[in-house]
Image 1 (tube, protein in one colour):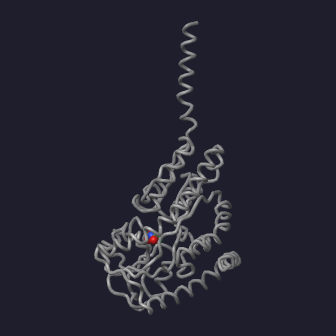
Image 2: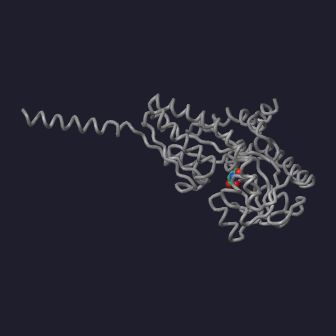
Length: 324
Ligand code: PCA
């Protein structure tokens, strides 16, 4: 009798010990940008909020710097359930669906206000797309406005002819083609190395990536063109989301809404801070010349037209709702 009581209590202890472990869900979050980048810092804070608000039931591990999956692979990894949640630059997926690339088009939305407005117009369409692909859109945050980095002064698009141009998306490769540069697609995780080895020399991106990848070590000029503000999106696998209990789902959604607000505010702050850092590191940070700006705006008009042709009625829906 004693022995049976003993073994019962051992079993009970084992059960109570294993219960919290069983109830804990662990998610992996592959991300493509370095740990110090503001998007990644925001992801860490988001994971922390989820942990606290779910009472420790949902643990999200952020894998920064494309350490788990490379940037172009993250979306498929989440869709296929190899990762439960992930972060992508939507503009990278424009060839799959044109609307992913709307915020990567030069001068369609070239300020934070316009970018917010474009996001509002994109959001229902994005939510539907992610849902159709078995995923749930959680939040999206804009990168700071995109400008032009170069080794030599650039006064017009003609000065870009023949240059080895780093592209990160179909749209940035298309800009290169239209100005007569040679596009080479290099994701942020490999950018410093591509510059160091001379694979690329010009590049359009933000001050944030300029600082992350120490572009000032190789490039002398930054033209603050403010051409577009591409967005990172964070999304979960729908089956993984559905498998959570209701309180954990609510915790996740609430933390996502907070991360979105925090991320947009941080993006603006990072924009100012990083342009100051580029200056402090010896770069010339200047507005584009009127000619360069006009040339790039012309590129933007061509690209918008091409985009509208490919995007069809869905594209029209988006542009109409954005213009309202
Ligand atoms: N940085 C990322 C995308 C946009 C940005 O500002 C990059 O250069 O890869």
